[in-house]
Length: 215
Ligand code: GRF
Image 1 (tube, rainbow, N blue to C red):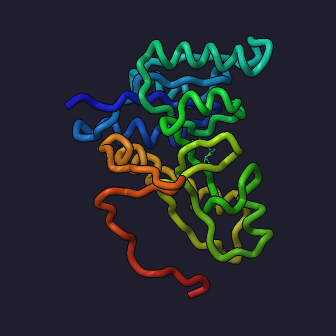
Image 2 (cartoon, rainbow, N blue to C red):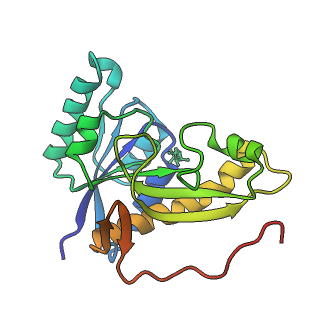
Image 3 (cartoon, rainbow, N blue to C red):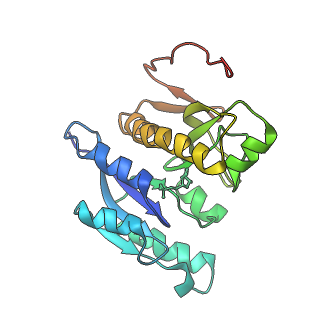
């Protein structure tokens, strides 16, 4: 069976990219990474891709006169590699409505909070400051408004009294590395349907009991 062709867009460390690389190393995984694109030269994610023997491209937004020409180059590349799904994984550029519409229902993002709470940046500190007992991460389809769009998978983690933004980020990141490969698998298996901007997952296995924090 032919695998879903995925392009991954990064700007830095690339630990979520690594999780996707590791998942795709399983011959039974239904998706393959056809290109890793960074808008920032020399980042660690590009190294990870190189080590895995993947094709990479650097499309530096600074080389372009504005968002539209940058995105036109990006689109040309994504078409050339035959991408069927585009995964944002720590990609730190806002995309125009035009780009997002062109990839409607074929563009995913991962965000380190339980959306729609805590969109934007500095989310771990903001969750701690708000005193919420849980945070987590979300994989969602991308819509024009930042960090919005139909939710595919979420993972929740407790926030502990001693947490700093860094310790919370690390706890959340571990779950990011589980749910991004899961979301891409569900997409590739054709199990996702969007109904009224909500995702229906075919044959979904519900998660277990409720979590209470503090226990
Ligand atoms: C992750 O926390 C992701 O949720 C956010 O940016 C970070 C990227 O980390 N969008 P990495 O580059 O995948 O390690």
